[in-house]
Length: 130
Image (cartoon, rainbow, N blue to C red):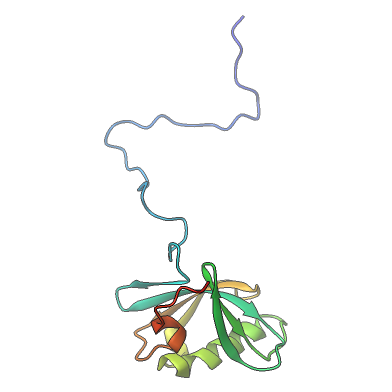
């Protein structure tokens, strides 16, 4: 007697030649192995936030994230809002040019900074002391 897939087995459809398939070479993370990447004139930055810190500061990269500390408490996304206001002048952009892609209420977040006119030193250092 032939066995059939279980009732809870995932349903799959065959892929015919010519069907659209996801690219195999695209990294799962938009920034690859770095904490930042450029998409045209947009800077994509992965952040590891530290709310309720003693001072607002950009720290060092930690793997594929940049540590950023802010003094605001982590209540209802206020620390992220404070972080965006802190970072905007450091990148030479208005607050409206920084988009929180994900992580509004989480320490792990991704920002898209549209057309920055300057970069903090950590983005221009050639040292890879991660």
